[in-house]
Image (cartoon, rainbow, N blue to C red; front, side, top):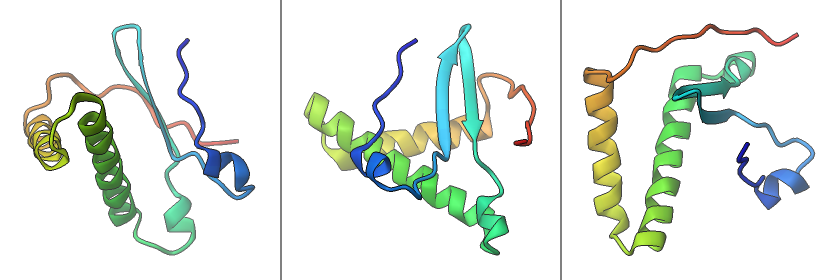
Length: 102
């Protein structure tokens, strides 16, 4: 098992919340997603997740830019194109179920 480190800000903030964890296991993608938090706060859950995914794409783009010397804007354009292509024509079926917390 190869876990990523927890950001220092999340460790230091007692109110931090893990929203999304993504794993590649058994040759497929597995996710643990905290949905419903924004709805419970009477905010638009769909818009909030759009912002989360966009922010994650920018973080990934910046990391790839730093690691590989690419321009962050070019990397982000590539991520966006791949994202839109995968949404339009998925390369695999989404499986699984929503498990409600106890």
